Length: 420
Ligand SMILES: *Cc1c(COP(=O)(O)O)cnc(C)c1O
Image 1 (cartoon, helix red, strand yellow):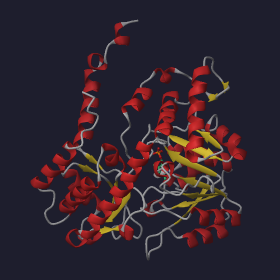
Image 2 (tube, rainbow, N blue to C red):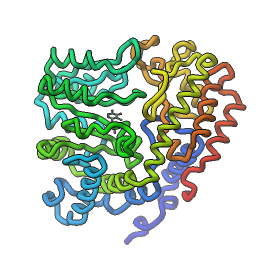
Image 3 (spheres, helix red, strand yellow):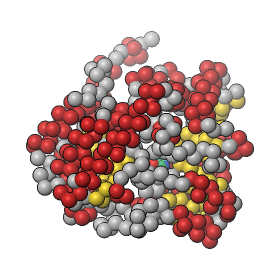
Image 4 (tube, helix red, strand yellow):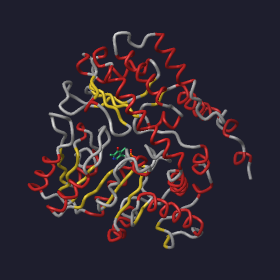
């Protein structure tokens, strides 16, 4: 084989290798509070960077359009069996390229163009792929949305029921990207039954917490569940679908050939490892730390409310997210985010329900604890993190002293030490 085939990346393409090193460096120096992010184990990168990526495998185990899939069949069977066991599902599809693709495929399976789909409004915490006009969902289906209540910022189940009775959706989505609470899946099941809709639970954010049995499992109640593999589940970037046996054929056909081409065997191979790891005690401990870290962070930020004039939305958290309303401070989300960036804390600025600042930026800061719990943060570290966030958002601002403390905190939790 030519030397281009065997030479290390650093020799072959120093420019790209330098960028990957720079990204590793950035990840080490930043405190990652982006609620949808996590760090994958070294072994998972090994699967991701393996020869599995070489194989075309259109179709499903035992019925492929390509030769030579007998090993890939076993890899996919392993991922499917582990996904089913982990979540107690009758059927799993591990091929969706992402969470969004998973949602589009589910609609392709369950709806005809023009059917009504009821989802959770994005600025109220939901995901655009559930209904929004800017996505394929809104392009092909009639998307409508329910909200959170103005009074307590909790999801308005009564409004969802009322919209369902009035519009008779074919599919009702329940699931969120920016919401610090759990929902009553049974109430959504009842609504779906009353109007003859399919209930689709999108557990993109909480899949890891569900896997660790620290969040209600929607699988027994929903007709279909979608999730991402890279958020709290801590696996490779991708999506997956779980469903009742009776819908298996339709779901599989809607993924391939309905909405995707050849699957990514190195990715579903990595999912097989992630599902395996998620059954282990170490993962359960990590999720427990993710949750208690979020409670600690919420407590420290709530105690600092007078100083920061930033409010903890709903007063606390039941998952890995802590959401701040920064509007009472006079800042918008972008300004608040800039202060956090100045002390190397990464988070998201988000519009909030009933936002005082209209527009796409809004007044919300979404913080998550999954990545830092994976990095080894304990409750003391999360409390310190909360103090630094409060200082940066409060009167002191992102001073040099606060910057130094944040850098010190990051340095005390080494990341990927085995990598150069
Ligand atoms: C993140 C997310 C998605 C989309 O996942 P991608 O992999 O980014 O496409 C879908 N639904 C919800 C609720 C999410 O939070």
